[in-house]
Amino acid sequence: MIKVCFFDIDGTLLSHKTGQVPASTTRALRQLREKGIKTVISTGRSLEELRKLPILEVPFDAYLTLNGQLCLDENFQMFAGTPIEEGDMEILISMFQANRIPLVLIREDGRAINFVNETVIHTQSTTHGTIPEVDSYNGEKIYQVLGFIPEKEKNLLRKTLDECDITSWNDTGIDIIAKGGGKDVGMQRYMDKEGFRKAETMAFGEGENDIPMLQYAGIGVAMGNAKDIVKEKADYITTDIDDNGIENALRHFGLIEGNTDLQIERSEEDSTLTFRLSGPVNTATADILRSVFDEVEADGRDVNLDCDGVHYISSTGLRIILSLSKKIGNDKLHIFNVNDEVEQIFEMTGFVDIMDIKRK
Image (cartoon, rainbow, N blue to C red; front, top):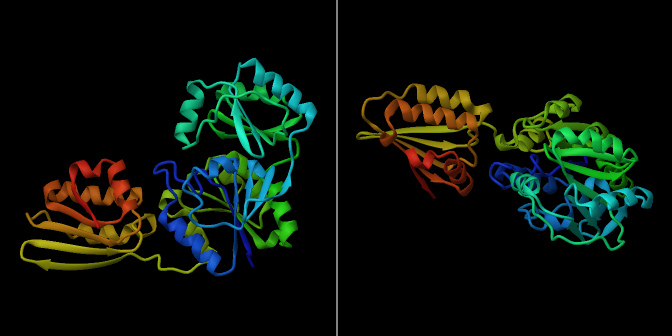
C-alpha cells in the first residue's frame, strides 16, 4: 500500500510550456492528501527558488531540496543536510573564482553566482528559473553547486570533479553534489524520519537526476515527456505533464478516483449546433471527441463548443479541434466558457488568432 509519493518539480509538477502546475495535478495532489497519503517534493532546486514558483499553493509534507542534500519538513525547517566536503569545495571555489564557467553556490539560506552569460540566461529562461545575485564566496557551507556548461564539456567536468556526483537537469545545466548523495538519499532520510518502507513509496520524475529516486521507490513513474534514459529505468510510464500525467498515473494505480471519460451533450437550434464538453480532452478521450466531430458536416451551420466542464486540453485534443475548424471554416466555430488554463493553452498555440474563443 502506497503511503507517500515523491515528486520532482521541473517537467513533473511544473510545466515548462505554461509555467504553471496543471490543474489536474493540483486536483490529484489534494485528493492524495485527503486520503492521508503524504506528498513530498524532491527537487534539485533550492528553497529560495521554490518560493518564487507557483508550486506551494498546495502544501506538501516535506521538501527534499538540492537533490536530497538539504531536507526540510512541512514548516521548512531542516531535519537533514549534507554539505560538500571541504576538500571537494577547494577545487570548486577555485573554479568559481576563476570565472571560466558560470557556477552557482547554494548555501542553506541563499545562492550566489560568479558571473552571468548567455548560457545562464537561456537555461534559466527555459526552465522558469531565476538568476541569483553575483557575489563572492565567504566560507559558508555549500550544499550544491549549479554549473551552466555546454553538453560537450560536461564529461570533462565529470572527470575533473571525480570526487563529486554530477547529474544533468538541462542540456546546459548540471547539479554538483557530494559523492554518494542524490534524491534517493533524501528519500531515505525522510522515510527514516517518518517510518516508511520502500514498498510504501511512489516517485515521479522526468530528468536524469530523478533516476536514483525512481529506481529506489517502490514504484517509479516516468513522465511521458521524460528522456528515454529515464523511461528505461522506470516501472511505469505515464502521459505527458501537459496531458494529465500525474493524475492519470495515480488513477492507474488506484490511489485516487475520478471520471476519466469525456461527456459530450449535443443540441441543435435553428442554424447552430452546440456541443457541451465535460471532462479531460486528451489522448485517452480523443477517440470519443473525434467520432463526434467526424459526424459534423460542412453545411454552413455555426458550431458552438461549450467548454465549461473542460479543465484541460492536450495537443491531441487541439488537433481534433483544429481539424473541425478547417472542415467547417474558422468563422463558423465558436468556443466559449474556457477556464484560465485552457485559455492559456489556446493563447500559447495561437488558436485565439484564428478562432472565436471566449473565457468564462
